[in-house]
Length: 139
Image 1 (cartoon, rainbow, N blue to C red):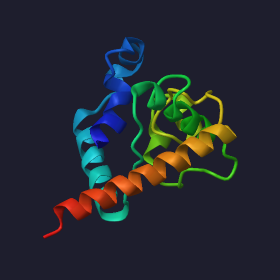
Image 2 (cartoon, one colour):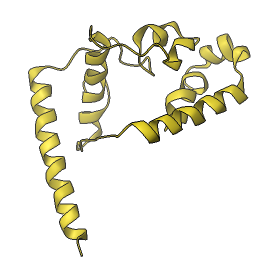
Image 3 (tube, rainbow, N blue to C red):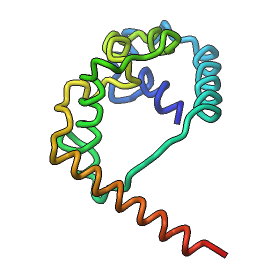
């Protein structure tokens, strides 16, 4: 996961201009150490949640919830990375300024009321599904 979040910035084959512009600045050993640090921090200090959404169009693309969630976060005036956030050292200005580990969808629209309702319905459906899975796997 961390490899995708961190390394995807500079090694994404879809963005050769980043490699051409910043590839000489890479320190692979340092990146590996940072990835290991990030993985350890995430495993020790974070928990993750998910909601199940049917169909890729519901999740991805310019009209999917992913783009709108990112757009919402990128517009948040109360959200900011910590002073020790490693993204401050990224060669990508958009990444440094956004405070997020990505640049795609930063300009996307924020969640609408309809989107919020979709999230609530999907969250409840996910809870129901997880409860059903627990019941099926109970001794």
